Structure formats: C-alpha cells, structure tokens
Image 1 (cartoon, rainbow, N blue to C red):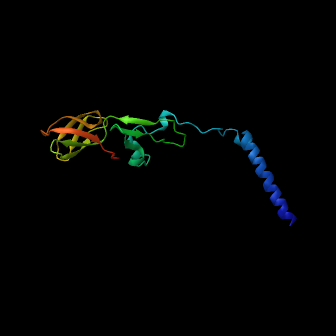
Image 2 (image 1 turned 90 degrees about the vertical axis):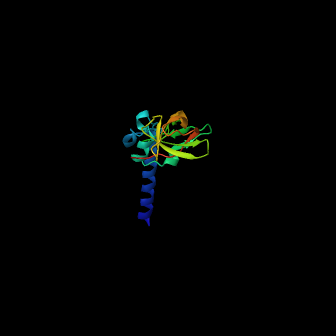
Length: 156
C-alpha cells in the first residue's frame, strides 16, 4: 500500500514540475512559443489548384460566390500555423463560368488558363468575358446576356 502511495506522490510531483517548467518555459520547454505562430504569406496556397492538388482542400471549403456575384478564394495554410484575419482573395476570372443567351439557353465554359478572360465551351465555342464572367464577345455568334462564376475547380 505504501508503494502505491509513493507512486501517486511521485506522479503528482512530476506533474507539478512539468506544469511549472512548461508555464515558465525553462529547461526542455525553453524554445516552445508562448503564442501560436501566425502564418506568413509563403505558408499559404496562393491559388485554388495547388490547394486542391497539394493540400487536399475541398472546393466547397475554399471557394464561394459572394453576394455581388464574385468568386472568392479563401487561402488555406500549407503548414500548421494560425491564419491571419483575412485570407480571402477575389478571383476576377474563375475556372468555370455559366453564360446565358437571350433565349435562356445556358452554356458552361472552362477557362483556358489561370486568370484568363478566355473561356471555351464543350462545343468549342470561345467566349471572352470581362471580370466575374460578364460576356464580352464569342466565336459562335451567340447573343449572350449574362454570366456567373461557378464554384468549381479542377486539380490537374
């Protein structure tokens, strides 16, 4: 019985020493930061493709369309660190846009390269747009009246 009491007292002393050393950051805890490390700009994925491919991020967690119809990308950190207050980036040219013509027909088009105003439909029609998928002109003779970004991104 006295051995059990001795073990319990020893564990309690070890716990108290551990707590004192950790809270004062001495001995083995000297290099443990007192606050969480804030992420630097190089510690974020700067475009959605890398965040999805390399970081395993899900599209619905990093992309959304705001109330003004703009695609917003929230940069996830690459490493374990505390993200800064605002990591949202407005993407003027999304990877996918949905365009509508005067007859109500909808065309989904994919961006030809990152942040390019050129989109191509599955039928091969090239559509040039202003930022946020506002159609400018196209190669198919379509009378496009509106467009909107889609919350969709491919990881190559």
